[in-house]
Length: 139
Ligand code: T46
Image (cartoon, rainbow, N blue to C red):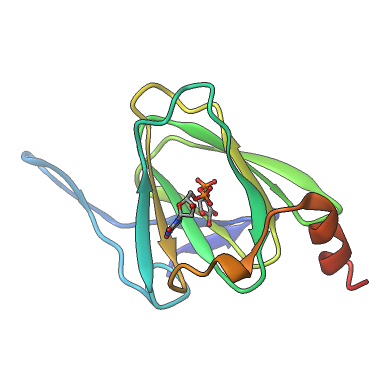
């Protein structure tokens, strides 16, 4: 697994096979990402002024990629906030549990792919920032 971390999000670098027909990138759960992939979802047709995310997950771990175009992901652990720009389909960010995330600045036609460690469960979401701050600080 090629993962590095310089901050709140892990950086995932997927392999690429290049030949005259173009590039091929692949991803295997528990190999290129540090969990079994239970769900994959896509965000597309996103208006350039849209803001997505605005929540944290109690258990869910995810890796976020920009398959096409670019967008910004802001992550926050309750103490520190960092921004990452995704624009290369081979490079993703690992967002661990109990990290608040916001996504914006989508380019025209951007496509976001997310690999998730669990099936969808609305009960795993914390959609209120003050609740997040209380839970992440353990109070
Ligand atoms: C995240 C960011 C990066 C489902 O029914 N199944 C699903 O798998 C997902 C992801 C969503 N939904 C429903 C729940 C809502 O009624 O789709 C609706 C929109 O979801 P939400 O407002 O949470 O979408 P985003 O783009 O703000 O957040 C999504 C993920 O939910 C979230 O886990 O980290 O993308």
